[in-house]
Length: 453
Image 1 (cartoon, one colour):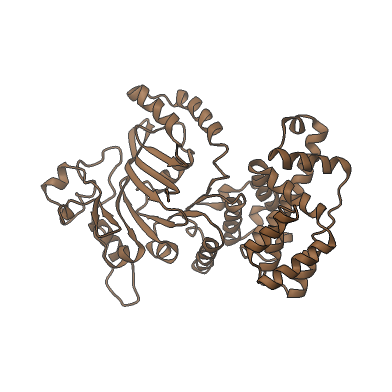
Image 2 (cartoon, one colour):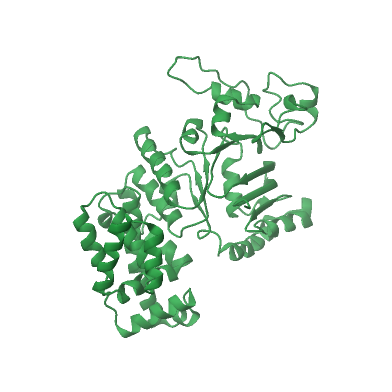
């Protein structure tokens, strides 16, 4: 099976007035399908830059001298890389801005729909003047309006007899998703299965209320114009140009689909542990706590059922109680969503809770990749060993800080970038950049100490 995402020798440079900032210096990384991969390292090592680079969301003064980000057999950074290779030292942020507009157009079917990102600070990620329900629903309306139209159409076509049969099926199969989807396909009710499964999976209401709510999914009232519009969107799998350009029709389309988007937002927020979601969707970001805002941005990221979700410091802006709740939420999401996750954090303890593998990053390079247990109990790279020794433990082990400072990325040390701080450095470390050396069956380490072992 092919990887969900592959990063090959990715370099990123920021052209600033104070010089050339080398943010990424040859990142190599693979993300398997269904895997949760953690990225750890000190502040300034390039973790967030790598996540934004995958999404092609870097500013106009960022260049890609070399490297690839391969998703679905397509290179996501080919346009900015080709420009950087062509102009070399004559890189112009103003000209690069035109390239980025082309990149945004090419990334429109991917960004937010197939690859989504949970940004570091939810308060700055949400629009302060729009209600929560609108912001969640709009992400579906923009990327997958046909999903909303199918839901509305399914409710209008469902009869009381079919919904009673659906309730019986859910009870007999204990909410088996495959059986429910098969039932919806056989009765031409695509879109009703996710609504029924959401109600059935709720743990906060009694079984009788679940059955009543599922039976209420039948008989969605619609007038002739609304029915025609919904049928058109479902058949076209998007909003046709004539429905978006004729003012009267475009207003009806937006009203019907955004109303359904608000309903979908309530379902998403409820499934993510937000109580009284019907009230929360009418609230604004400043009215929510940090943990609730974090759940909202996760809901936006998951709204279109993406294949890859990048989470940048999902627990950095909340207290330890909410942090535990969000980590539990991430663990629950990974079992219910068939997506791959990249979780970026400076806290190894956070990554140990949710990740299958952990990659350690230093000075814009991956220095070690291994399964979580191997990283925590058998670290190889000296930097990984020092990171783990700097974590306080209940056993009272003395905390050992890492001597020295993070290098200035405008003047990266020659050879291994960690050698000025490494107690084991020798002559080759100061002159030659280490390659990824395999160790064991599934561990890679970029350190000359393990050459030939």
